[in-house]
Amino acid sequence: MAIADAISVAPSPGGLSINHPTLAAVVAERLRQLIIDGTLKPGTWLNERDLCEKLKISRTPLREAYRMLASDGLLALQPKRGAMVVELSAYDVENIFDVLGVLEGLAARSAAERASDEELAHIAHLHEQTRVFYEQRDIRAYYANSMGTHIAINRAAHNPSLSHTYDRLNLQVQALRYRSNFDEAEWTRAMNDHDAFVGALLRRDGEEAEKLIRAHLAGRKTYHLRVAEQSVPV
Image (tube, rainbow, N blue to C red; front, side, top):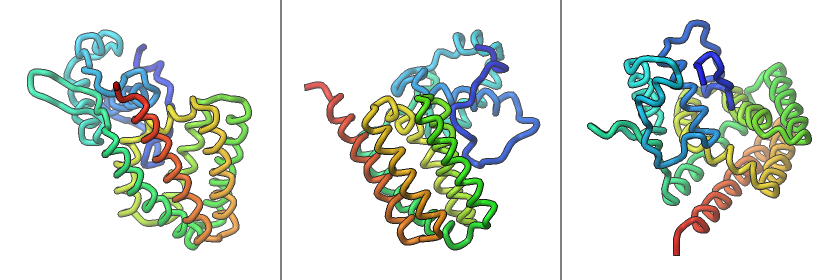
């Protein structure tokens, strides 16, 4: 699992390519993908020596990457214990999705008003590709385009404060959003939701786009809370 072999699951939150990232940034991105796809599970303490060997790096960039991910809310750092993948409580999940619903709703409404025709064409293309990957049952590619659609809508709102707040919260639940696609019914529901809110956005119906994307986030929240309840030991 050398760094050069890293495969991205989702686009970077900022939607901007980095030509010359630091090694620590590359390591952080690799660990972020492993958290998103469930390789590094919530509640897992990371083995520093093992990761250094597998990623073929020294401890310095790994520890710098830990700090980056801790700032994102993905890792918890404890003296003498190291780094643990954050495990969200049902309370955390409910609150984060509630706020994301408001943020994504505002982004959709603003994008309908402010997006250029080129930006809307880009969103339409991402959505079309999302549908293709859904029909091919390619979860990894589907997720990358699905999340890319959400991020493109956010950027088309042209509100830096909104984007900054959205990025950090969205990072914290990307693993949940990725894993929900392994539930066939939930995956189909999400795809249909995308058809609806993207369609409204492309018609520049901001009110309808906001309503539909907020309903989409509310549905995701309900699903994840139900899964959390089912996993609690009795």
